[in-house]
Length: 448
Image (cartoon, rainbow, N blue to C red; front, side, top):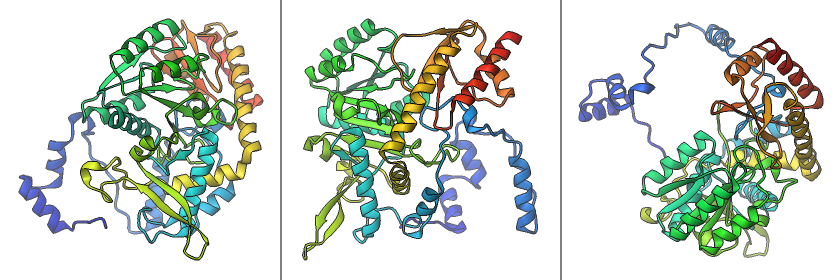
C-alpha cells in the first residue's frame, strides 16, 4: 500500500530537513529553470459550477488543431478511438483494477493482458512480449540496460539523429550505471560513414546497438540485414525501435533479426492525453537469457488441478518480488489499462483494418512528399524508401513557414536543425486534407 502522510508528518519531515514550509523546500530543491517566478492565482468560488466555468474560460485560450491538420508525431499523435473501445475500457473490471502483481488478481485481467501479449507477439514476429512498459522512450532505456546486464561491455550505440526527448531519457537511464553512449550517423543519409563507425565501435566491444526502423527521418534502411549481421558477428545485441503503424505491411523486428524490439504503442488506440499515459511495447526472442533479464511482467497460460484453462503471472522481476539488487525493473504503476485498451482497439480493427490504415498512410505520405518537393523552396533529402514519415529540406526560413501555417490552423511538421522539416501522417489524413495542406503551403510560400 502507498502511504499518504498527513499535515503533521509533512511539518515534521520539513523541520528535520531544516525548512519551515514546503515553498522554501521546493525553491531550494528544484533547479531555477523550472520555477515560474509567479503565483498561480485561482479565485475561490462557493460552488462547483462557477469553478468549472472559470477553467473552461481559461482552457478556451488553448489552440486546438484539427487532427487532419497535424503533421507531427514521434510517438504521440492524434488517433480516433471508437466508441466500443471507450465503453469496454471504462468497465469497472478493467478501469478500477489495481496494479497487477497480486496473486489474487482476476482471471479476466490476466487473460486480457495475455491476449495483448499474443497480438503484439504476432505483429512483431517475436515469441515473447511483456505487458508492459511506461512508454517508448523508457522502453529503449530499459532495453539498453538489459543488454548491458547480459553483455557487460559498458558501451552501447545509439543513432545521432534520434528524437531529442527519447535521447534525453536514454542518456538519463544510462548515466547511473555509467554506461558509455556512442552516437552513430544516420545510415539513410551517410551509409558508408555509418558502417565504418559501427564496425569500429563493435570491434572495441559494445553491449548493444539500437537501430530505428523506420529511422528518425522516416526512412527504411534497405541494408538492415547487413547491420544485423555485423552486430551479431561481434557478439552484441541488436535492438530495433519500430513504428507500430509500419508493422502491418513492413517486415517486423523479429523477421529482421532483432534480439529486442521496442516501440511506442500510443498510436494504437490511446488518447494523446497531454502526453500520457502512454504504452511501451517490449518484445524479445525465445532466448531464455533474454527472457529472464526482461523488465516488466509476463502473463502465462496454464491449467488448474481439474484441467481448466487459467492464466497466471509467470515473470515479475521487480524489487517488490525478489531481492532488490537482483531486480530488473522498477515499474510500479504498470500500463495494464493502456495495454488492454490497445488490445481492444486492435481487436476492433482486425487485420484488414490495420492493413487499410497502414497502406493509406503509405500512399498519402508519398503523394504529399512528391507534391511538396515540386513547390518552390522544398527539396528531397534522400532517395531511401519511407512509410508515413519523411523529411524535406528548405533554403527558406522554416520558422516563418511553420508560423504562417500555424495561423492557418496547421501543425505543419517538425523542424530539425535549420533546414530540415519532418512531416508525419496519421489515420485522420485523407486525399482531401493533404490537398488543402498543399494549397495552403503554396500560398504561404508565394506570399513570403
